[in-house]
Each structure stands twice: as C-alpha cells, then as structure tokens.
Length: 427
Image (cartoon, rainbow, N blue to C red; front, side, top):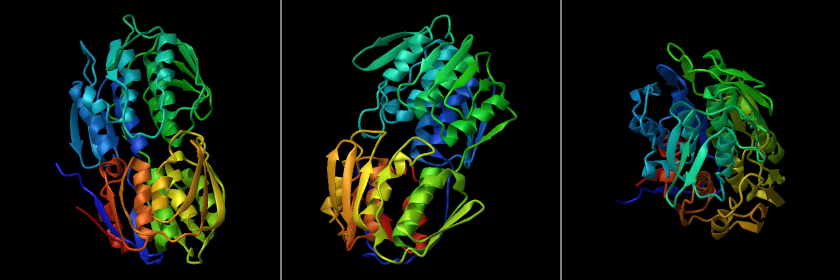
C-alpha cells in the first residue's frame, strides 16, 4: 500500500497565515487514561478524546484484552473484564506504540501476570525499560525475558515498595501509580515527574477512591486497596499542550496573526517565555493565545535547554529549532531527555540550515538562513512536524513522507492548516 505524504508550497518567509486553530485533547493524557481503565470496577468514561492514531491503537489493545468499548465523537466508555486467564498484549500492535507499556502497571496488579513486547513507537534514542522491570521486581514480581517479549508474574499480587526513579520518567511515574493503587500496602515513589497530565489523572483517581498523598511533588505515597469506582464519573482529557505549542511556533514563523484556542496557557509558560525572547507579541485571553508582530526579521537568538516539566518540553525542541534557523547569530540546543533526538538537524541542513551536532545531546544553530524545499522522510512524530514547519517557510515545494508518524499526534493537520492560508495537501 502506498504511504501517504504531505506536499507543501512554501511561503518563502512571507507571513500570510491568519486565523484561529482549535486544540484537541492531549495525546499523552489520553493514552494514560485508557490504560488506567483497568483500575476501575466498572465503566470509565473519557471525554475530549483526540481522534488520533495513538489513541486508536490503545483502544484497540484494550478491546483485544476483553474490555467492552462504546465509542462516540471524542468520547469513549470502557468497561474492563472482571477476570482474564491470560494477559498478553498483541505483539505487533503493542510494538508500534511506546505508551503500551502503561498497561503493565494496572494489568499486572489486577490480573497478576502480563506478557508484552519491547515497547515501540518513534525511534528517538534509547528509552530503557529497566526502570519498569526493576520496579516490578521490588514489588515482588518475577520477570522472564525472551528474544521477543517479557513476561512479568506476581501470582499473589504486588506488594508496596519504596521505588526511586534514577531518571525522571513520565511513563514510569504513571505506570507505578497505577500498580501501587492495586498493590497491598504502601508504595513510596521518589523523583516522580510533575507533568500536568499526571496531576490531572491523579486528582481524578483520588476522587474515585485512590489514596495518593503528595500529588504535585516529586514524592508520592500511595496506599494500595481495591478497584476504583468509575461510573458515573467522566474523565476530561486536558488540552494538548504540545499541539498548542507547535501551532504557536507556526504563528511565530509564518503567521500574520494566529490565535490558538481551547488550550491551557499555564501549561505553555516555558514556550511562551522563549517565543518572547525571539521577539513579537504573545497575548493570552482565557483559554486562547494569540501570536502576532513577529514580522521583524530575523528573530533574536537564544539558547534552548529541554527539561522535565515545568521546563521546556523535549517534544517541542525540534519545532523550535526551525525557528532558531531564522534567528540572528548562533544558538545552542541542549537536549537533556533523549539521546539521538537531534539527528533531524541533518535534514534541515539539506534545506539550507546551518547546524552542527556536537554530540547526541548538543547542537549549534547559526542563522538566519533561507530554507529551500526538499523531499524528505519523517523519522518520528516531532521531527516530522518540524519538517512541515520548515517546508512552510521554505522556498518552493517540500514533500514529507512517512506522515503516519505525524498522524500519531496531530489530527488531520493538513485540513486544519489550509483555512489559515497554507497550500498543503495529502496524497
């Protein structure tokens, strides 16, 4: 089957895009909430669900495990099975999405065993699984590894433990919150992530009966107990701060005046700070952010360091690097979360950018440099979006292949950008 691609007619630096763009529900919040459905005794309803590929894959995995699912527009009801004799994730499907590892916490704690492949998703450097394996072993589980998969068993259930995350990990924090809720005794999690999505789901779990102390701090104390009470509660997915940030960067790069609506500006503080460093005006009005007055070229340069929330998100590093190619002088990028996430810069260089990768975590960007349209392959979700942004400001035509990666996190982005004045088509 032919892979779809985006064909973009570049604006050659012109700032003609104008209008509003609405933000969908958060991908990262949605995938964790879907996995958390196995913590509930009865139906769990999720609202403001983004219609994207990662969400569809997670729901398919849940369905394959025996959950009853009723899907609506941006809403789903999930009723988990009371018993499972064998808990095995679909190997082919689970390998396609990193978030599938979130199932290990609630499934192991509830059904006492799980078999799953090494999680997949985007190839952006090492994403070690040993944090998960060692954590479950500390909670009394037995781990068996084969060439194809892992099997984790806890025949008498998980037991609370004290677990220190040597690296701040969003996915590990979420997974062990889930495991601890159904484990026996007390679990203490240290060096936890503080992302808004964790706070949002944590408050909901508490309202459903979970005993979690310390939410909003790096140390969580969780008293294990029984299954949680879902219906008639509904969990509302947060606005996607990465999608909102991506469109704000687009506004700075190519917008005359672009307003991003239905977002949460408080979750965008770091990005807004960096955009203000570049010059221009950012106006916040309730759940909307407007980008304008960036028509003085070039941008002011600045250095960028990614960090766990509330620092600058690694998922916006590649899109903002496109802006740095249009900034005067030299800027430095320090990627602290993932190694190997700077390789997309080599493709930007083919378009005319002047970047130097110093090592797997550091790079230099010199500008401003005009970009020229090229044909390229999207290597992952966020780099793929960066290529789209680069194509928008470039001269001539840009073709981006492997856009299934972009579809994982951005719903129908081509259809949403055309009303702003961009010539982009999917073919």
